[in-house]
Image (cartoon, rainbow, N blue to C red; front, top):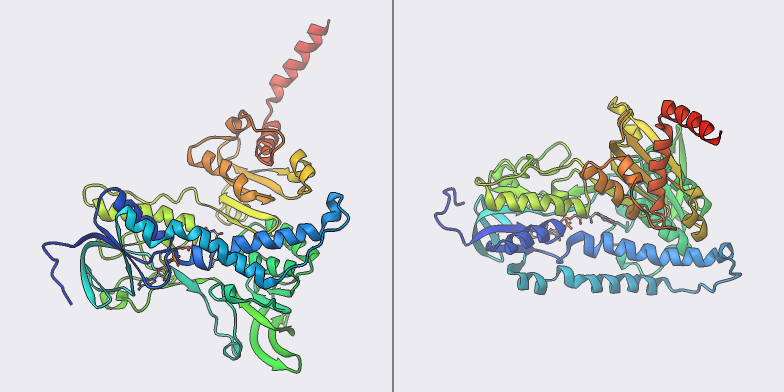
Amino acid sequence: MLTKKPKKFEYNLIAIGAGSAGLVSTYIGATVKAKVALIEKHKMGGDCLNTGCVPSKALIRSAKLLYEASNSKKYGIEKCDTQFNFSDVMERVQNVIGKVEPHDSVERYTGLGVDCIQGEAKIVSPWEVEVNGKRLTTRSIVLATGARPLVPKIPGLETVEYLTSDNIWNLRELPKRLVVLGGGPIGCELIQCFARFGSQVTQVEMAPRLMPREDADAAEEVTRQFKSEGINVAVDHKALRVEKDNDGDVLVCEHQGKEVRFGFDKILLALGRKANIEGFGLEELGIKINQRGTIDANELMQTNYPNIYVCGDAAGPFQFTHVASHQAWYAAVNALFAPFWSFKADYRVIPWATFTDPEVARVGLSEDEAKQKNIEVEVTRYGIDDLDRAIADGNDHGFVKVLTAPGKDKILGATIVGSHAGDLLAEFVLAMKWGIGLNKLLGTIHIYPTMAEANKYAAGNWKRAHAPQTALRWAEKFFRWRRG
Ligand SMILES: Cc1cc2nc3c(=O)[nH]c(=O)nc-3n(C[C@H](O)[C@H](O)[C@H](O)COP(=O)(O)OP(=O)(O)OC[C@H]3O[C@@H](n4cnc5c(N)ncnc54)[C@H](O)[C@@H]3O)c2cc1C
């Protein structure tokens, strides 16, 4: 192992992993004319493109079409013919990946000036990365190795070919009975799709509700919709073991002190994602791992080695593509410009969405978090069932909920449940990021009739609750006087 810092380096930056985090890091490096390399052992684009965001959203689209067609009566259309082959749907998912692929491709990144290397990287010293038997020297390294599905130690699980978000995309036959373990975003998005395609589905979650990270009212809206679509929602169920009986494989759970059995043809594990931290030199170097099992980083996205940075799912705590890109900016800029310039990662306004139907989108504080942290907030709601466009579209359900500082219009957080919630939230993200309050949001023209008007009406509800009562009493007297 080379222990002395080399006098010269082949690269300014080498990123390990070509998912969102590694791609953005090297994009930034190449843009500012640094010499950068990107090493990927599997597929360019990482999880987001190949097994995550892109395939899941493509699948959601097909499932939604089917659901709407089978509910066409609601739109005044007696019947829609909805014959389909599940394998065609899964092929379409692959076609969508193929269409997005060029954005993350070797060709594109090579064109941008990035040296793309296919192979498994290993860090052999703080300034050297080995790949395909060759050692490359670099002034800084960005760890962008991502995460993989967590596989729990459930007795008997090893006896079945379980599905995860990694291999579910290889399915070409619709499972008749599907059990999904996990009530988080990935489990919720996928189970709704399979229910809509016609699988008999059960969702098992240990917590008392689905989407435990979201507020209870948001989770309730999704649960109600899930139940209406025939999804067996088994919350407060702890998975004990997998076994076989005459009908095939069975997941045995504990619920209120009793054993409950769910038979299945396929079981999908959606229990969270474990950072990739093993087998590429971190142990040998003594890179610190935190209690969450991700690579420990300071505010500059620096590990305990000052020239080794980390971003994306390998760093956490927010495992989203847009957070990976956000962190990648700090990791790359700090890696390239420190000690002359460095910037602390800004986590004040992190939005996310779960793309169930209805979608659940959130930025900043939730009501539950405010309670836990003893933060005083005012909560303003607007029911989307009241919104003209939502009614016209048959999407009149859900709500906009805004948390503000007491007596002020400063937005501390927002949760939106409903159709296009992920898109609607952007206005609150912008407002929070740039310190725009509800008064200004209310004073902004929103196109009629759009879903985005829901945000304005939420601001309107806040304004009504803060109407200046004394001034209004004076106004009443004034107009009485003017009427003579
Ligand atoms: C089903 C599903 C749906 C999702 N939906 C969304 C969504 O809608 N919106 C959203 O924001 N996020 C979503 N996510 C999360 C999102 O995919 C991740 O947060 C994002 O991909 C993280 O990017 P990353 O670059 O950190 O890691 P990854 O994308 O995992 O990339 C890491 C890469 O590093 C490579 N690698 C690892 N070790 C080495 C090594 N030693 N040498 C070379 N290469 C190596 C891996 O092969 C991999 O390609 C979803 C995830 C899943 C599973």
